[in-house]
Length: 443
Ligand SMILES: Nc1nc2c(ncn2[C@@H]2O[C@H](COP(=O)(O)OP(=O)(O)OP(=O)(O)O)[C@@H](O)[C@H]2O)c(=O)[nH]1
Image (cartoon, rainbow, N blue to C red; front, top):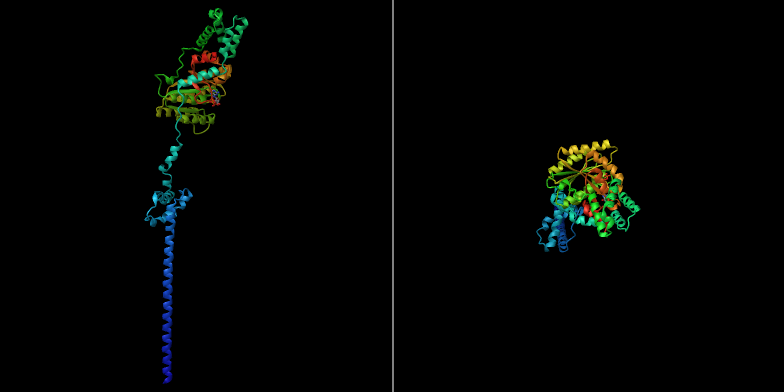
C-alpha cells in the first residue's frame, strides 16, 4: 500500500505547513498589535506632556487677563485644569493667571454671578458723584455786591453827578427825574424823590460831595426799605417743616433757574430740600430742574408723562417732602397760560392740593428785571391770581433798570427777597438794600 502511505505523508505535511503558517500569522499579528499599542501609549504620553509644557510656559509669563468673549472661551482651559492644579505654582502672578480663567468661566456660566451686586458694586460707586458744596450766603453777598457795582445800574451815579453841580437849574431837576424814570423807579416815586431832594437843604447849601452822596444814599435806602423783613419763611425760627415755596411768574423770567439756585442756597445752609417739577407744560423744565438737583443731591419729583396734571405732581412732591422729612419743598410752575382765569385755576389748584398735605408758606414771584414796566403788568396778574409773599428779581446783571426794585415793592406791597445776578449756579443772593444802593451809587 505505498500509495496510501504517500497520501498520509502528504496530508501530514499539509497539516504541519498549515500549522506553521497559522503560527507565523498569529505571531506577526501579535507583534503588530503590541507595536501599535506602544505607539499609542507613546503618542498619549506626548499629548499629555504638551499642555503641561504650555501651562508651565503660561505660568512663567502671565497672559493678559481675559474678558468678555475671551472669558467664555477660557472655559475649556479651566475644565482641563483639574489635573494641572496639582502642579506647583511658579510665583503669585502665575497663580493668578492660572486661576483667573476658571473664575471667569464660572462667572460666564452663571448669569446670576455676572450680575451679582458684588460685581456691580464698583460701577455703582464710580457713578455716584460727590455732591457740590454751594457757596455760602456771606461770600455770595460780597461777590454779588461787587458785581452790582460793576453792572449796568448807574442811575445812582448819574444822580450823584448832577447833584454835586454848583448851581442846580430847573433842567437839572428834570434830568434827575428822567434818570429815575429811565431806571424804572416809576413816575410817581420818581416825582416824590425829586421833591424830597429839592426840599433837602444839604443838597442846596452844602456842596460837599460826600454829604450829597450820603443824603442820596439815605433817600434811596428809604425808598428801597432798609428795615423791611426780607427773610424767606423757610429761614424763620418758627418755619414749618417742610416749609413750602411755590415759584410763579411768566415763562422765561427764570423760575426754573431760580428754583435750582434757591435749592443750592438752602443746601449751603445745611437744609434738606425736595424740588417739585410742576411745570409740565415744558418737558425740558423738569430735566433742567433735575440737573440742578443732581448737582447738590436734591431729589426732584416729576411727572412720568408730558402734559401731566401739575397739581398732581405738586401733591406727589409734597408727599415726598413729608416722607423724607425735608426742611424745604420748592415747587416750580409753568407760566404759559392764555388768560387770567386759566392762571387762577391752575395756580389755585396747585395751592389747594399742596395744602391738603402742608401749609404753603411762600409764593415767590419771579420777575425779569430787564422787562421793566411790562413785567409790572404781569406781576399784578400773578399777584391777584395766587397772592405773592415776595419777589425774586432776576437778570439784574443785565439791566440798567435797578429802579424796578423800588417800583415792584410799591406796586405789589411785598418785598424783593432775592436777586439773580447771573447765570452761574450761585448767582442768586438774598436782597440786601444797603449793598444794592451802594452798588447803584458806584464807588
Ligand atoms: N443773566 C441772567 N440770566 C438768568 C438769570 N436767571 C435766569 N436766567 C436765564 O434766563 C433763561 C430762562 O430761565 P428759565 O429758568 O428757563 O425760565 P422759566 O421762567 O423757568 O421759563 P419757563 O419754564 O419757560 O416758564 C435761562 O437762560 C437762564 O439761564 C439771572 O439772574 N441772570
